[in-house]
Image (cartoon, rainbow, N blue to C red; front, side):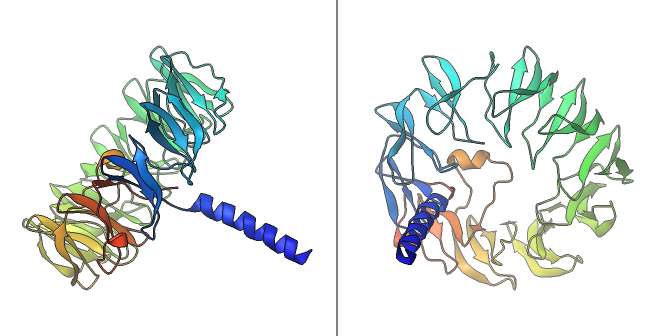
Length: 375
């Protein structure tokens, strides 16, 4: 009995481990396949077109028709569609015979009241338009918010900016108003604070309080994991906390977010790095610079190419790469450049691949294209 239970548990672990495995889409010889984080080609390049995995399934094209494959490369949903989009919140949009529908992983169509434009699900809801107003439906096809707003922006951590009559506010996925629709501008949701503008005044929303910051003419969204964001005053940029206090005075021309205790900043036409007290810790010598990853490496640009430095400012991976993401991933909000979970997507001599933290190409292989890893 113990042996049977152990084998059963091992089998279940193997199944769930496979489902949790991240894969990256690559293009080789004009066909699309998928590699794992060890660099193994787990799904051979065989598809005319494809997209990255989402919720365990990836769109793929065969004989000019789209379907969905699983992580073994088998057709989970046969290629019978003219167009498809990725699975989100358990459903994917598919086009067949000039009709869009939502389907679940079995291919079953979700019945909804949607008659006009179809939108992807995100955070368990999808936009629902009637004439010029937008509301929300849930994954049961039920209306959770009647079409009420002129604009609803994509959800961020379960919250979305909304606009009516040129005024902005914020709602949650149930349509509940979190921030009244009374601001001229508003930033995306953050658990630190949300920036907003009323007239010429910029400030931060903490609960129901709008704290105006004198002299500020722009504020950026809080970066995930950071208690500081940046703001501009008199054409210079510095860092503020969630209460609107200047932690680092506005003395820089440009900045990017803090991570791992350092932030890239731009002054006198060069980039360097400062710590959370505003002290310069890496010299202003780079043409461009990106945020440090959790592993302590950051992309920096020398002349026309990018390399990677450590937190002491030492170039540990030579500046011989491009790092700008392409394909589908370049349109993602806050698209991260550099190392993600120990691998960095780079371009080398017109081909794409991934570097490990020692600067070695994953699997020793380069591809026509490579997208970010996903599940």
